[in-house]
Length: 487
Image 1 (cartoon, one colour):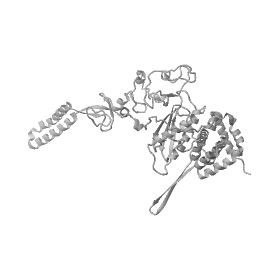
Image 2 (cartoon, helix red, strand yellow):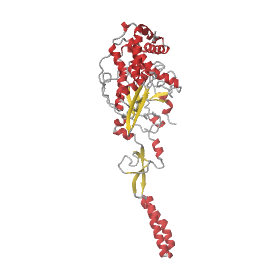
Image 3 (cartoon, rainbow, N blue to C red):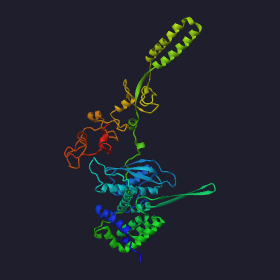
Image 4 (cartoon, rainbow, N blue to C red):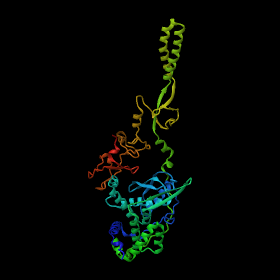
């Protein structure tokens, strides 16, 4: 007699962890949310094999899990890698309660993109919806520090996969648990075969198939649905999934108890309505959406340096007077003393004459010529931000600009910056925003009135709570408080 899968220790632990999610976030999502399949019904949005297409899939998945209010951004490679075995490599780069930013390192086959992003979206959901990980005040980002222990990393990956199962991304998680692809080509008379194995997330294919089958049995999914799921899986996964379905169906009541699900009469109806394409929110990759004005302020700052023809006159006068001296010494030695005296006098006269003749300004950075009326240096493409003062170096002039960030980048010009903070050099390390002296921050420890954190040294004036991190009101970037201040 075959042993029940519910009696297996590893399976029991998986169900226990799923029960934790059901108790924490409610049973409704687990029993009623549609289980996404990688087809046009669930992903009706037009897909392009570039960063825009990857972002669209991310928006679709976020909408599915109820995080569609996040501002989604993406950066990295712009287009698909045309290698047949290219692996999609996308990671969650930044997450706050307002923003979801993905870093795209490689774009492979279209069918892989939802599998990779499902894992990152589930990770985001777990971080934003878990009590200890969640941050609601504007100072501290959630504690997203990576553990150096490999075991802890594997546990985090498994947690994300389990969360994806709970959210209705279970089929995508199972598909990504193991993928095998191969391609062949001829090199002369030799056949060359290349292959790649992919394992996404922290669950093995067998574990993913068990959880998917458990959800199908718990929800009492009809045979036509489970058959579609089965056909989508790889041959080995089909076997596992089919076996778990057969073994779990007779034990459905025990399975519901293990998952902590309430009476079925309280369950909401399955929500598998038609999926409409997402609205175009006008997003453009950063390189494409930069306006002309923004391109200018993002350029390297340079300064005009006045130059005249004095040096050229000195060199020319010296050369001519030296030739004259040589000729006199050879043909009229009696005048050699006068000729020797004439050499420095002529050179000095040529220098003084040349200094009265102006020449096109030079660039303070590359020392190339910058024609009059031109704002960009032809040599280094820097943006002219003024003229160097007497005795001022290029570095000192750049440092004196009020819109330069701590890390030496150019920020957009800002209106309303408080002079006190301009003079002190206080600015956001990410975007260069200079505090305007207004009360943009609020302490969640005491829920007191809004205040200006920089006027109180990063401390709440109402309860003396000290905050190590500060959120920029302009770019929503969380940065260590001390980094706002110059060295």
